[in-house]
Image 1 (cartoon, rainbow, N blue to C red):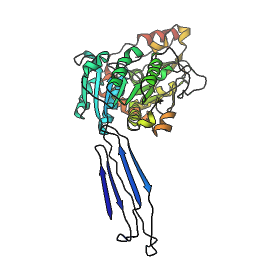
Image 2 (cartoon, rainbow, N blue to C red):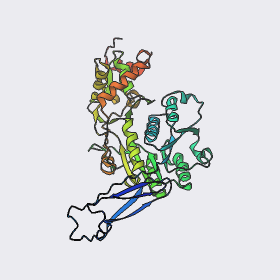
Image 3 (cartoon, rainbow, N blue to C red):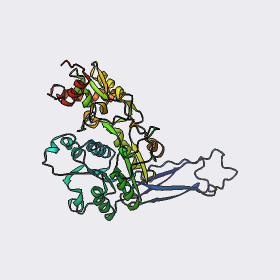
Image 4 (cartoon, rainbow, N blue to C red):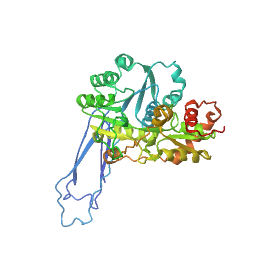
Length: 403
């Protein structure tokens, strides 16, 4: 057996050749290897194995063979997450950081604002110790001054999970470019798609040109060679500080009607945040595939608005009364009365499946059971909540409420 081992700062290659006639002088080397690796923090390496001439004597058994085995250990990435300090997207950065750390990458999370602010007492920020205990770093500051906040730092990948327009994101993009960041990821929104008569939304569908996220995507495409944009919808998961499933639980556990605008048959997409983070991680680990692409960062199944209410009730083990209403007829702003859009708002993750080989794990019925257990654990089912807008709608509909 002949064994050759080649190693670089970022990779390890082992090669073995087996032959039933190892001492035969008539057997030339069967393969020629050339190995190249980009320096330091690159996760990508290249390996070429090309056949050489093979001269077998008549005495060489036909079963003479060679076997090749190799292992490439690529150096992990150093990733910066610029994270929002409020809203539904904040939890994405939290899950993403934890998944990267679990995969062996280095992570720094820069959260907007100050560590001592009251916002940091809420989820997911009050769980940032999980990032630190996993080997990550957490810092706070203003992304507009990112060069001062992170002076001297170097990163391979930057994710902006904060800005919603170019004014907010441009400083991060420009700074990243200036320090040699190789890959830039941006959390956009599926909300930028124009309303369609042919749901679901897929990558490439028309978007609202005046949306702030669109301006960021355009600037990124002009500035970075390797960039990707991710468009999430609604999400659930531990640590989310924006009501989604909680809105339904609040009413179901108190025996109140669940008020749904329209027919209740409108389709939406509600993903567990772990699917969003796994898609982002796939982009980090497959940068060449992700390069220059837009991904709907969603699960692969839709749910009706009525269906969401019923699934939440099932998770709680309680009955549910659904009441439909016409917001316009009642003069009600549905955006304030209901946590989701009152129209079809459903995207599919076709690009992530085809390009990244990604697959989702969201299982809404099971995920909601987990979420309900946490809902009860934190005592929200006992918390005093006012339903003033609900009561106004119910009064207009002349629907009695027994509580």
